[in-house]
Figure 1 (cartoon, one colour):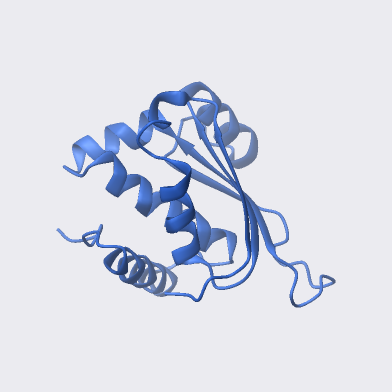
Figure 2: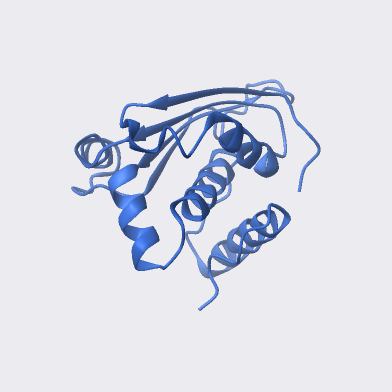
Length: 155
């Protein structure tokens, strides 16, 4: 979807269960496919306990969720136009694995989708209303197709 943009990427496996299969090169490929501008990102895999704590503290929701995006320069008008997107994207391994099984997807497919979803959030995309949701889902579907993955929203 995008030409290669400058990317500084940190990958953290606080929950190491996916470290052998969801490797840094795969993650870099997925992130790069969803970037429309330079970025400095951290992708962190956590367990349900840490995921729940973060969701409760920052979103007021007392449960672990699949992905959380903390975009640090969102809406910052004083930044230079070429300032990189800065964000932490947190994936909860427990929720991710459960959802993949329920949706009859591989963990890799679902992780690729959630990382792309998080990267789009980091760049200002959202799904608060039907129009935004349709736009974001379309972009996700196109990126995933380019990477060889099925439409995550197909019934």
